[in-house]
Image (cartoon, rainbow, N blue to C red; front, side, top):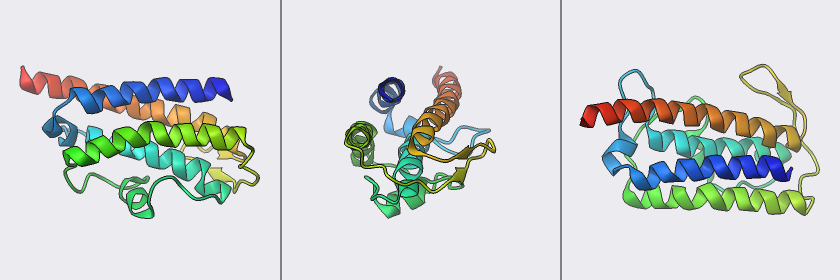
Length: 156
């Protein structure tokens, strides 16, 4: 699983770059043609990883239920994030992944509730959840890259 964790870390470093390189206004903007902001997409990947890996393993998540409810599948941007929200999210990008790696290596994941994802694949264990999560995070990086082009064109 080291390779899967490494892929996730690399993706999250790219996501972190957006949090530091873009203005608060850019991070909160929902570009025309999109349903959510860059901030929402990054918060959503953190929440989804926690739901897929921890909640379905019947373990406590590293994010609050309130945060999970605000950024889970089916939600949309409802509020503008503050600078403190951005900083907290940036910390969570890495702390949740490090904790997952530690918990995995320590054998905490004993059970898993099967879950069928939007691609119609059914996850049956935590390893599949971790691997699918990388696919999911890549999709959202793609959305963010598309938003980046729109936002950059709006400022030129």
